[in-house]
Image (cartoon, rainbow, N blue to C red):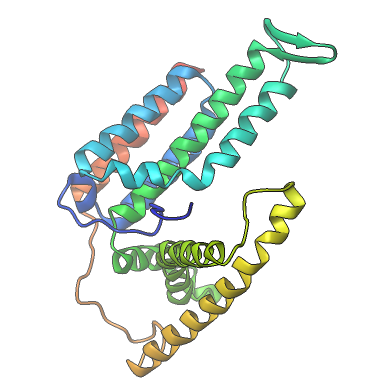
Length: 265
């Protein structure tokens, strides 16, 4: 159920997207996500999907990991699709029974919304799959650095965000182990109505929270043992610099998105 989440994992490689400066990658992902909400046509989603597929192919990322990362979204995707199918009206009536009807516009809206969610999750996973945690921390800190004069703790925020992303796969794997252990003892997580299923998750959540706090405490002790005292005065073994190639990639992608938006208008 939880195993194989793509977000938070890092797969080393030497592809073009791997070599991009992390801050530029964050900028690309941000432009991509914003533009995805501005598109509401089939051809717009198709163009963005082709771009995502091209990045996945050129980066030589494992398809199984990306597809398994969609498993936690199955319920959300199904719920979104059903919600649009039954509540969005317009177009040709495909099915009708008493006051319940399914119309073509509802089916189209549901499919497009589910498609958008899939693209968003897969694209967001590309950032962590192609960027090491240290590089991601430095990039987030670099982007937040202009806010330091007003008292924003850039390094601490970047460190917390990166640690949170890094421990997503670990916590999901821990939840998988706890669930299997509880099922071996007779726990049932699948039968019953929604309220009964929610109650059955309590034996899973309690040990998961305890394990999470224990991991956080161990991590804090390990960082203190290595004399970690925050970002003040810290140096880096590898300093990432934005090159001309990185700027050209960002400007070119922003230009392509602008052209697509103009064609849409």
